[in-house]
Image (cartoon, rainbow, N blue to C red; front, top):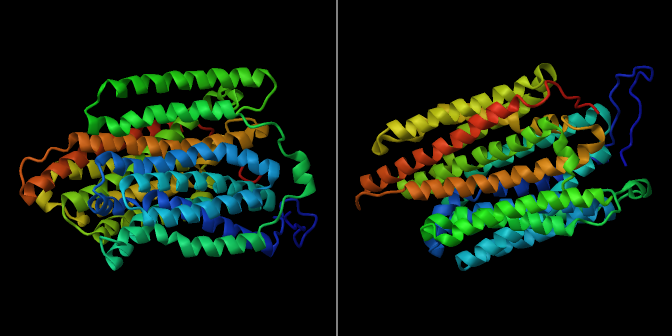
Length: 496
């Protein structure tokens, strides 16, 4: 699919292959889709307080708006990749992106919290359908060392889109008002989605006969998909709803059922593999202890990373009375740090190897620890965005260094023939980590929220104390991620 030739010196084995212009154009189309999907993981954060007011949404609903999207996204990733291998990634990408754009329309049209959550789940499901095609096309379109460059660009887009979400969301709400501005947070996807669909139909190549002949034609592991989906839903529902409902018996039973279903999923995958079938998650991947550690690393890091601005957005608007734009402005240092870190991560990875991930997670730990201390020790009336600039910049730099190369290092823990399956698992776990992080952090935040009066100072103090409690949990996730980085290999070859 990619047109490649030798460089000017044909005898040079180190010459990078030349990639066609059309391949780079296709990459722009693919990354436009990925930008939309990942922008929507964070752009909604600044809209949560206005959604809560406009739709009279419950505290649990706010968590579902983020977690429902992330969970559906993660669960769709692996089967979507498998389907793309069978019928061609172009039309899977196109179909998923079209559904994502339509779901974005209905998110903005929602008249109550139930409609919004349903539309967000469909939106997340659609994102999980088309995003695997991005990595699949990079594998197909870019050979050798150029592929590493393409993946580095993709990693930068991941970091930047997630970091810019709160800023863009804040600008939209400021421009169009709190009553209807949050709807534009979803409708911003419409022009981007339509333009990307047109470009995808023109520029993305169809599946070649050679690729079709090598595609995995085994049936999809539907029972495994049902078991893992039911397990995660059974675990997340009580985490999100438990605080609102006072932790009744059903929440405890649901957590137990979720754990049992996860065990059943593991047993089924082993049995399915022994029958010579292709499982949803190949058990052999977990015969590599480093891969198991890497999967947990992806889970806990994304739990820490995604939850930061959930906490800050609610504190800044509901607690301190700032606007959505002011809440988005708070995230600018983190966004700048992420952009700078992402831009340097590929070059530093080639020089330093795993040390880049160690530095990245350490900076996130330092930034979140500093942020927690600011929330813990500062009087709510004296809390300003200036106090958060340094810790968020540090955390953003660390995030940028980690986000782009982390998947490459985790995949390097398994045999090369297992890389595709490993990549699918990692992508799913990252999104599930986001869902778990919001569920846990939301429960801690609202569970810790005690307002000792009706004055503005009492409200601000209550929300600041709750934010400090939530931030220390995010910090705990980040510390665990820092420890788990040492399970990964020291070096990985990104050139092949």
